[in-house]
Image (cartoon, rainbow, N blue to C red; front, side):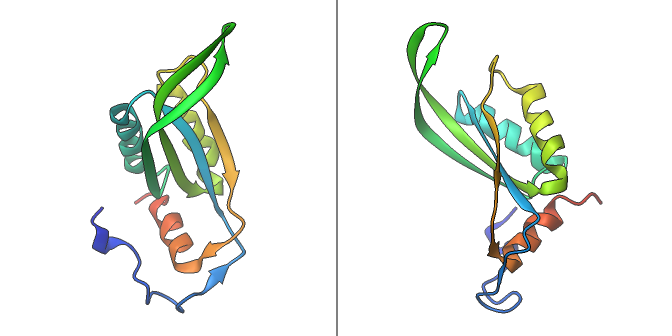
Length: 126
């Protein structure tokens, strides 16, 4: 989606905030930018998320099978409708290359009304 397809600052009432939030975020990590981008493309194409943010170069330190591990990963944050969250998480888990992927559902307490509407519209089929 082109940058100019995002809602403009003038969409709706400027500064209008909604606390009636139907949007959630799904947080996950991938071993590379390429795998995160591929997953993000799939989620958008299947209307399982309205927007994907990918943060490359994140460092994780964790215990795994009795050893302390360090890995460079890419964070993927999927913004989706609360009613699509289960399907979004299931799609991530089904195609994820990790044996035990981090897939977390994060609530959104409030946000820009125009932006939240834009996210919800991106999760509707058709």
